[in-house]
Image (cartoon, rainbow, N blue to C red):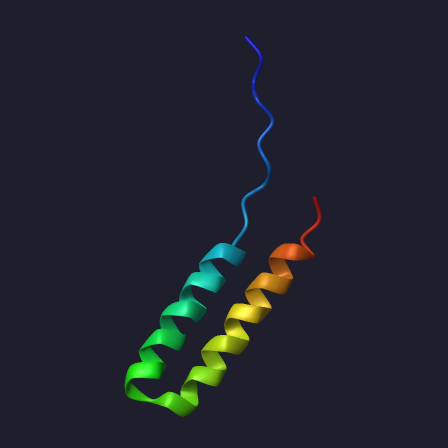
Amino acid sequence: MAIPHLPAGSFNPIIIALGLAATFYAMIFMLPLAIIGIVIVFVGIIGWVLEPR
C-alpha cells in the first residue's frame, strides 16, 4: 500500500482568517483599524502564493 504524498502544512490560511476576522470586527466597531486587518490579509495571501512548493 502506497503512502500518499501530502504538501507541507502552512500557517498562511490561519493568518488570512485572523486578518479577515480583524477586518470585519473593525468594520463594525473601529472603521479606521480595518486597514490593519486588510494589510494582514494581503500579507497572508502573498505569503501563501510565494510559498515554496
